[in-house]
Length: 489
Image (tube, rainbow, N blue to C red):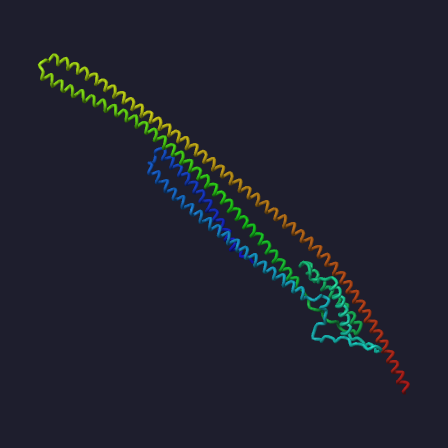
């Protein structure tokens, strides 16, 4: 028989492996969501580039480890499925061998079994009677003893049964177990009736008892019933194992397809995220480069103005020294006034340039802040859209998985209903075949019983006629002897 506990344990292990695969897939999705949140946080300025790179490296390493674990779980599941198929194949071969052995044993038992009417014999320690002696033409047949009469009737019945069996080409034990059992009961009843007729004939012949009944039979029907029950059990267990293997294979195939689809979607999401990150970095670099160029221009203008101021101050110092040294104070005073006026103009120009530079710097900083705000708003919008698409993809995946599960349940229910209908149809056909076989067997047995009774009645009548003729011949011989004795006297 099948090792049901081991097969059930293997099925439970396969289910547990499938659950672990589903859990690992869900953990991978959660980790992908965490990775996306980390990238979005790094974009928003919450983390530095080095910290974000370190976090992404750690998460990628964890994902690789989980992928390696999933591959190992897949290999273990495939190994368990292969082991289950090997065990199923081995058990099927063993059961085929057992069924073949049972069938061969039943065939041998049926072939070795004698016809029921040929087993009629006298029980007890009495020796088998010797066959009737051959008669020479002209001699009279000796009177039949009760044993000889029984042997004559039995040989006649055996000859009729063997002729009937050789013409039909089949034995009474062929057929299904129920028909064989019923036939055995009817044969026992017929045997009891024939023995009763024999007892009546022998009581008429000599007034003594009749032979005892022959031993009953019943081993062959029991063996046939056990073989049929074992065969039905083997077929039911084989069908159950095939359905379990098909369900496990379908579940593994669905999980493998779902895992491949999730990996493809995750890969596309990573590529799109990397592309968006590269575009955002390029935009930030361009904005920073523009702001740096404008700042450099302003700094260069400031340095030029400072050089001019320094030159003017040096000239003022020289003029002052000349004014002190020269005698013409008025001319020098006018010259100093002109220089002071020039210095004042230069100072005002420098102040205006500084104010213009400050205004330009402020405008540059405002434009930079506005560009950063727009970039952050765009990135937030992209993040929101990404989250919405991710949520929609998750919802679609869950709906698809629910639909696939519902379809699998419907297919399982349909297959179960079809199998039950097929089994019911097969059972009905077997019952019809059993009823037909039982009817034909019963009719055949009744016909055989009628012929046997007819042959037995004929044999009894012939035996009575022979006995009557022998009695008359004996009476004639006795009368002749008495007449000769009287003549001699």
